[in-house]
Length: 506
Image (cartoon, rainbow, N blue to C red):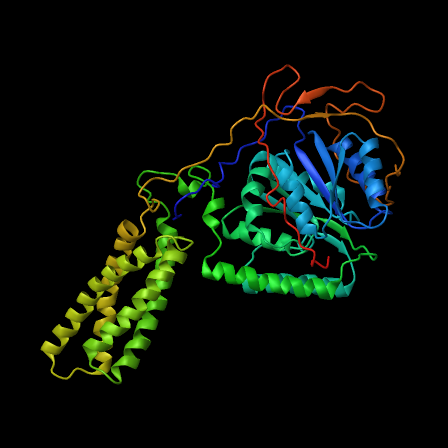
């Protein structure tokens, strides 16, 4: 069950239009800091790969994080030479800050980023973004820890990476396999709602974004990658690890206290097959029964321990009432979160009040059972009392589930209305972009491996982009060549335009 929806609720996923409407479908961001040597070859290689293999319009955005060398000049030269390349300058350091700023302002429906060293093989780029274009997934990540991935790196970095992911699994219950690989993509509608919830501006940005998305029920697609470690990486491992552990503690605390409004990024009715109204199949009944039985079993053990403790210094009726009261509060809270999926603090007091009413019914059943036992036997044994209480609790458990499902946690929002959805509207006032050729200043010959099998090559696109010297055509975002509108775009503004942190060491 979900709590009340908000203006940030995501619309249902849809396949992006296949027509070339001028607006880039993919915006690849390359965050850099003092990368004057590697930036040029990286961008040209990426640009050449996309021109040859990517069937949609694209853009490459260089996000300069306050570089102090000639990186800004290299970025401007690339922007002048290559029509699909743009550059953006930030005066504060931090990879997370760069990604949030550029992604928030981008008009492309698919947003991605990769490290400037191109450690990840570019053949994984199209498989990375394809599930987002089709509407199958919300986010996509490259994984170096998948079984079919091929990775070349030292034992030290391998140990650190696997240890970090074990920490995430143990502390934040993360199910994705690789949080740190610099090869990720996200749908713009998801980023628009998700990015304001991500606080980190450095290297923990990726992890925080993925954990929040996963806890909100969004779908994360993982792509096995071929990855070669960069021996010249400038990342400070100890400092980064310390900041990451602080981030894990902060996010874990926010999840435990319910301070993150995860319902804002829940998908609406119709996008999840479990949300569909199918006759004769109550929504989520099987899953709720499993969760309720697990919580009920643990609550019964907790109740019996409490009863035995209270019975040592009080009568059976008082011990039963106290044990039921304490276990009822814990049982309601656990069922609220685990069985019926209610997140956040909204309606928590009302739910506990209704839970106490259900507790009163259970108290009447168990107290009545004890009264009947005492009437039948003046001095029943402790084991007999426990047996009678277990039988009475089983009967009360069935009634408790029915009341929880139909009254305490019904499938509606806090106002009794069905969940609402938000539909992105078309905005014709969009900027124009051009397509054209590029210079060969940094052009490199592709690597040809030796071996019994030829190198896997992507299929050529049916309609290649114009090369250098050809005529370029301009379209408005969302407008096709025949003048019709086929794409819906939404203008975005930076989420935190005044986000500054002079003390950020990275």
